[in-house]
Amino acid sequence: MGSASADGQLDAIVIGWGKGGKTLAGTLARAGQRVALIEQSTQMHGGTCINIGCVPTKALIHDAESRDGAGYDQQAFQAAVQRRGKLTAMMRAKNFSMLDDLESVLLVNGKAAFTGPRSVRVTAGSDELELSAAKTIINTGALPAVPDIQGAQIGGRVHDSTTIQHAQLPKTLAVVGGGYVGIEFASMFAQFGSKVTVLDRGSRALSKEDPDVAREVQSCLEDAGAVITSSASVRSISQDEHGATVSYERQGRMHQLKADAVLIALGRVPNTAGLGLEAAGVRTGTRGEVVVDEFLATNVQGIYALGDANGGPQFTYVSLDDHRVVASVLLGDGTRSTKRRVAVPYTIFTTPPLARVGLSEEQAEQQGLQVRIAVKKVSQIAAMPRPKIVGDPRGIIKFVVDARSEKILGAALMHVDSQEVVNLVALAMRQRMTAAALRDQIFTHPSSTEALNEVLAQLG
Ligand SMILES: Cc1cc2nc3c(=O)[nH]c(=O)nc-3n(C[C@H](O)[C@H](O)[C@H](O)COP(=O)(O)OP(=O)(O)OC[C@H]3O[C@@H](n4cnc5c(N)ncnc54)[C@H](O)[C@@H]3O)c2cc1C
Image (cartoon, rainbow, N blue to C red; front, side):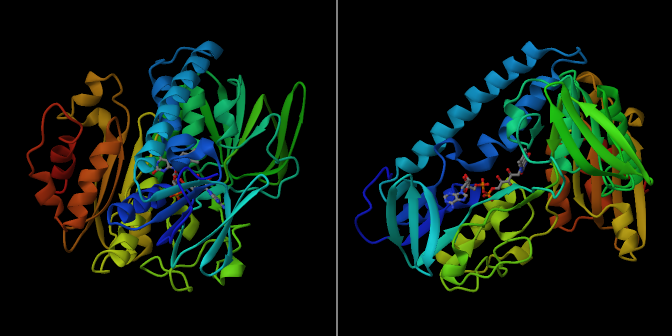
């Protein structure tokens, strides 16, 4: 089950091949420590991101976008699936060799569970391996939430975000849940020519975004052939050889939506069941998350939790930053902590993408802050030719600025390249730049970044 010898003393055990865990395993090994990295599936070497999450979905989205409005085409989808498969296989192999090449890393294939605070049992079929170390790092990720809805169990025409990536292209798709995973899949399948309906409980589409920003995203989804039905509470799902039927309640009335396939996208919950945390005495929270402090330490000395398993924001780069925090505790001066994180951005990969950082206008107002707003539709920004050059001048750019300090409180960027520009805005926020200072920077041309010169000029 292991790809190196299990003999000898281990310094650390990492459970799960997530972003933070694999990076920490490498860092500890390069610092001379003996580390065991345990992964339950050979198809998950490298973790969620490269195998079933960020990378494969963005590869499919890229290919969907390049179809430029062409209609339903099963073959085009299968070609994209094949390219995606090659890419993830290559990255999986690379991830494996990056750690396998390190002398002091022991790679173990199997499912791990604590048997005590310092001991872990790994099971693979009838094989068992007992490991112990003074330090254990939990990096077991998250799993799709299973809703208490009749007929919503994954199988047949009912999918989660993993199985839908391996299904046939549906002519009609019902997406249950309008969070970022649901919206990304809706946008992607619509561009492959599926007719998509998103059913969302929220009182309006993308209710975490300001209404003007949400409207822009919704309009781009509609351009592609996806509609969002809000205030829709799904009650049951049924399926037979002809199709699936989703029954939902909206404004006191029951409705039925028929589709070839249903995607359940109702969030992801920390994957900690079956980890034997009770045997180790590790405390968990109401969603099953491992409870950690700002240094990602659990209540049991020597046990840490990284990534989705600790209940923090579910992003690969947060898991990566979690590794920096624990590396600082184990190898450095121990000063890095999650409390020092400011302006952590995110992107929803619609077409064009929506990237966000900091507060929305609504959130700022709820906090009682006096704000000034700079907002422009991309089509109205004269000094931003890049979207026109690449043929997609849709979207909106909005800045929320503190009226007194002139500091940037947040931004919503929906336009081509926004997944890149948001990192610059986040950096400006971390450096506590004023909106005017960001406005007056020199940016390359033609780029999407240069829009900041013009949009922020609205504030004077
Ligand atoms: C469809 C989708 C799209 C996404 N898109 C993005 C995106 O664009 N950008 C972004 O930043 N994030 C995205 N995410 C979220 C991102 O993938 C996760 O936040 C990130 O991968 C979490 O990494 P992690 O370090 O917590 O662990 P993971 O990468 O989830 O790894 C956990 C590993 O632990 C293994 N494991 C679990 N239990 C055990 C056990 N008992 N024994 C041994 N091994 C075990 C699992 O098999 C898994 O390989 C997406 C997620 C999904 C589902």
